[in-house]
Image (cartoon, rainbow, N blue to C red; front, side):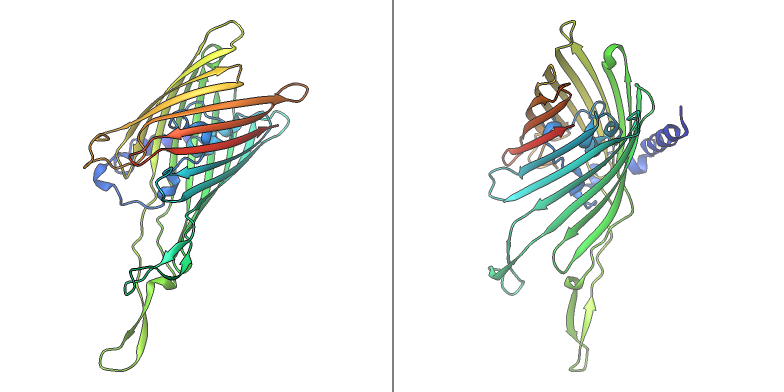
Length: 354
């Protein structure tokens, strides 16, 4: 095993065994920031709850396990659009774009880029003295950009690392940070039917908000002079987490045209309850895929103790259209539906594999 695998494996195992970092802790709910990092913007993986930590590949692997970035044919483009919280009149949309490319003659290395941007629309301006909307609007900016690298050490082992820059705020107040992900995938068995994946996500320094919006003008005691007073915002940590997943492929004919994948994963959150996810996907010749998943967390059926909007069932479908002489090039259309306590969320995606 190469030195890189040993380093990444040691990092993942070390943090996994550190209860102070990775132990699921409901008492710390709401103490982390940059929660945008936990939202999956992609249609294909969200159709079964992001369960496929072990076998996910391509650009979408940069969301859950960057090791899967190495498992692409050559070039991949992907785009998606999510109507967050569905028809709840919140008016939040998530736009995502990604690109991946293999490197070298053996195509054992791959690099990837992902950009995720949130659109909250125009928000009416309100103030303490004027709680009703006054003239004018403002916009919230929330963007994260990931750059990943993965290497295929053999047909059985893949490993990768990713760095993500994130920014969020309004015109006068903003916060910027950087996060790191690392992951490993291991394939075994006939036709690589057994897959195991481990990934560590959102590890990085604390963030804090700053800007002119935190300043105010006040009179100096005993005088008519004003001075500017700037409030310091508290620092907050990133929502770090450890993911462990397994999957198993069932083939129903000698040509492997029909395949059912059973998958399960465990997500250990440093600032929230842990989650267990189960999912199943049916694939016919890789041209048509149907999938479903279920995300479970403790107290999810309790209105008083539930901490996430999105738990429970999810559904998805994919149609891949091959083209080119060898039919290895494909154009894919993806759709997913996620249920929540408010209303469902629809995600549409397009994928081009060259």
